Each structure stands twice: as structure tokens, then as C-alpha cells.
Image (cartoon, rainbow, N blue to C red; front, side):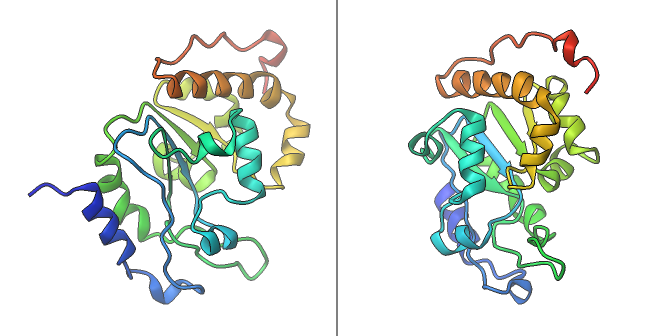
Length: 209
């Protein structure tokens, strides 16, 4: 018998594969539906997401929504936008600060099965280094973000929208002038049920990242 989305979500919620490594215990956080057209593939929940059970329910989510040009209601409309991190549970903190990487057990165990339940995905925003390494292979996040045209029509690479990214944005005017307008145009088109828009070539002013 074919697995249903409801069966899969029940199995994910019952997962204890890496419970011994999770300081706050298992609490998988994802937002999916069979009708979603846009997928946000990110890294792993932070503490606030773990507490609330709502992905990107923090300052990084505000920044990501600003990049995309959408409001919270649209962002959390799982009938159109799916949110699936590489690690579904909060992985804890590194000794030197910052969150631990997503648990390595998680994506190999669940991601293919989750994707099989979302046949209408037309574009994936690949957010942060861990998601990009898993989906796109090795490479520099900044290079991929500025060379986003290379990955269309399936993927749109983005940096992780943490506060640390603010300094990179200020040093990288092309992100605001070239990448974000294209991102917003793609998001609008996908959510409207259209194909991706024509993205103009990079301006000569930004021919060198």
C-alpha cells in the first residue's frame, strides 16, 4: 500500500532516531501539503521554532520573508509553500556559539519520502550552506547566490537569513540590486500558478561578483 502524507507525518512525529543527541528532545517541525508549489529547504529549527512549532518564527524568518516580498500569512500558507529543513529537530548549540549542524541522520531518512508527497513543487529555495551542500553539492554559498541563474528553473540558492548575513548584504550590493528582484519575481509567479518569469541577464555593472 502506498504511503500517504498523513502516515508519513505520523512516522516523522514518532521518530526517535537521534533523540540521544537532541538537548531539547525530538520535536520535528515542517509544513507540507500535496498542493504546495514552492519549497523552502533550510537548515534546522532554532530554539524559538522548537518552542512554537512554527518554522522561521523568528528574526531570520522576518528577513527571509522580506527577501521574498511576502507577508506571514502567505509564508505560512502550506497549501502553496512547503517548509522542510534538512534537520527536522533543533540540534543544539555549538560550544563556541551558534547552532549545531542539522543531524546527519535526518535528511537521508526522511527527505526523499517527504518530496514524494509533494508532486506540485515547481521551485525550491535552497537556504543556507547545509541545504545547499545536500541538494547542490559542495560550493560557496555567496557564489551560488550571485550565480542563481545557473540553478533555475528548479532551484534558487539563498544565504541563511541570520543577523550575520546583514554585513555580507552591505558588502554585496548585487544581492539587493540583482538577486532579490529576481527572487521576488519568481516567488510571485510560482504562487500565482504561472511558470517562472524571464530573468534578465546580469547587469554589466555586476559582471564580477
